[in-house]
Length: 197
Image 1: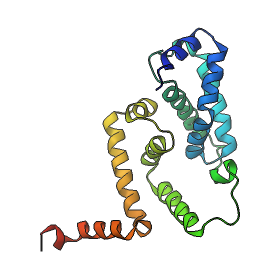
Image 2: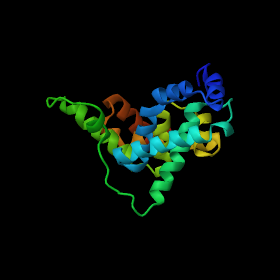
Image 3: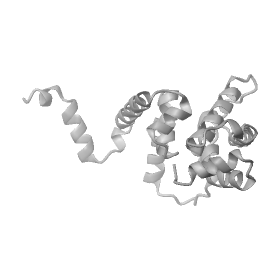
């Protein structure tokens, strides 16, 4: 949350369109990426983000000026995305966000590409709630308190899921970790080492 957030929220509540433009400029891309992680479709993510900003504006007088606008818009977008997921028309087709957002050169470093694919697969393999929390922390840069607000759960639940996510990813990505880190993990997992033998 920046020091201007309460002022921005007060301006939004007063119907200041420039405040709304500032929120759009600051939060559009992070919201679309977040919703894409939930829906797997870039077009649907953009539609949901647009709907979320429309809801933010339409209900501007009811929002608290003391909260984080970023957390608020993400919560609204999450609820809109959950509505889409419940819809029978939702497509399960998933797209690669990097192909949609960034142009890549054909001569990418193979090792980096393999690692990136492994990380993407590992994150996708996390249970849905754990994956969502992980993405909000790592990609969205949200604090545990903000995520608790977005997802309407306790801060401790966020912390627990994040801890489990990191543990799961460490296990799934063990072959890609530096050898010394992998050996340290193996030492810790070895029952003889734990007993001091």
